[in-house]
Image 1: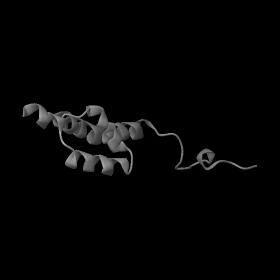
Image 2: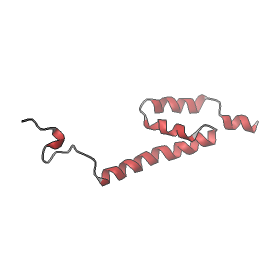
Image 3: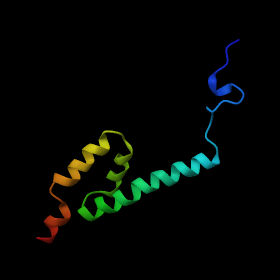
Length: 77
């Protein structure tokens, strides 16, 4: 009797197609790859760049990156 919105014919909601998946991979790469390099050059683990995908956590990570002492600079001194 009831149909889900995703099951309705002509619905915009449904599983993502191949083009949407490609766009998601491109967008994630545009965010993660540069931050991976930045975190690595600062002396932090590059895996911290994955936190840039989490809302609000990404803002906290930018402040940590900006104001925390960088391990890479300590090694040079």
